[in-house]
Length: 128
Image 1 (tube, rainbow, N blue to C red):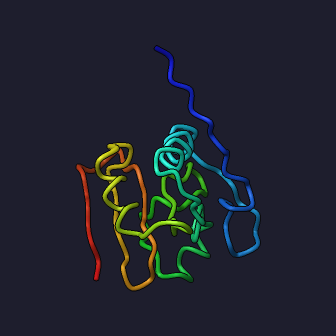
Image 2 (cartoon, rainbow, N blue to C red):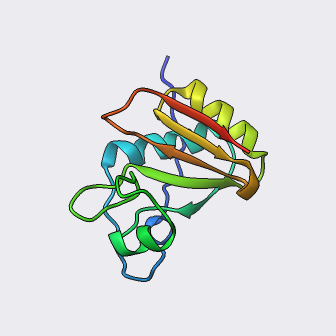
Image 3 (cartoon, helix red, strand yellow):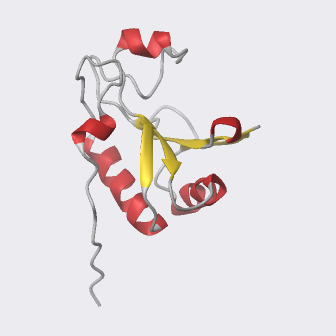
């Protein structure tokens, strides 16, 4: 039996650095997992923060080791806000799917951070 996924690709404008510098440098495996995840979720996702340049990462208070940083390396994270379902569903499915080893639900801002950090074990956090 063959299973076909009808994937809708994320567009570059959704993923590039929000500061206006135009940086767009993502890990292909991460993007593939993000797209398959959205298909499994069956809901539209808004990327609230995609890849970042170092300056923008500082401006938004990101860690110096942020998986969003895409200067000198490929980004391996995105913050997403669901448009048709509750963030809790995104959080739970992201953990169950096993595509990401960094899943953080920021309840106060209604988005979920999805990342792949090759240097860490699973990190699943519900931030109130």
